[in-house]
Structures are given as structure tokens and as C-alpha cells.
Length: 193
Image (cartoon, rainbow, N blue to C red; front, side):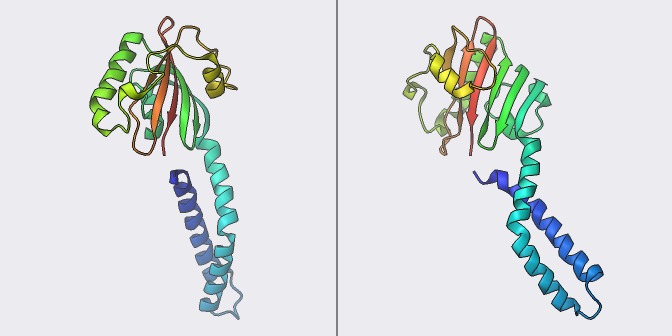
């Protein structure tokens, strides 16, 4: 949950540190001693940290979160957005946010079934729940559920989609898949911490 703050904090600390050093060495009035100037500018930097960090975070988030399109899995630039996504997915549309993403992509049903079975076989020991614990697993998609999850993205609700779930990490991270086998389209909701 804290990972979105790490990069803005690092950038802000770097910028404020460089500012303190620059003002101390270059912009201090001649009558000030460097030590006095350093402490004064350090105090100002501490007071400016939260507003500065907020501005840096807004700028960073504008680039890393939002709507994206990728031709294939290999074109996705960050590992978090590749989590729980089949590696042979194509024509990927994705809305990224700090706790996960929503995705829509092309994938033949045979490839998806092989992927989800392999995912469960590999991670069943680490899953907080067993595959049989999911009540909606293998059932038809509820259109209201689709609308609640993907509303506002302009994605049409598939009429014959089936719901699948990934293994669930101990912290609640995982994915739910809505698979339209007839059209080879998968809609995915992924959450992570």
C-alpha cells in the first residue's frame, strides 16, 4: 500500500537536499556563516517537504497511473502491471491505479484455461483460499457486477462470460477474470498491496 509513495519521497528528498546544498553554498548572504545558512535552509526544506512531496506525487502519478494500451504483454513497462496477466495476451487496454489495474485483452480460451490452471498449480500452496472456496468460480458473469467493476471505461459487458479467480495472496492481492470465450476476450480486475 505504501509503494506509490516511495518514488515521490525519493525525488522530493533528492530535490530538497540539492536545494539546501545549493542555497547554502551559492545563495547565502555573505554575512551569514555557512552553518547558520545550512540550518536555516534545512528548516525551510523540512517545512516544504509535505507540499513538495504532494506536488511531485501528482506529477509522477499522472505518468504512471491512468489509461494505457499495449500490443502485447512484453510491451508493459512495469512488473506490477504484469502481475496475474497471461504472457500471451494481446491488444491490452489497461487502467492502472495505485492498488492494481483493470484490463481487457485478447486471448484464446484454450490459452486462458492453460494459464489459470498453471497459475493455480504453481501457487496453490501460497494462496489464502483454495480454488473451491470461490462461489463465483466457473459461473456466468453478473452484468451488474461487471458494470460496478468496469463502469466508465466504455467496455461492453460480454453476454456469455464466465468468472474465474486467481490464487489470493495473504495480503489480499489477486485477480478476477471475466472470460468471453466466444470472442476470445478477457476482462480482468487485479488488486495488489
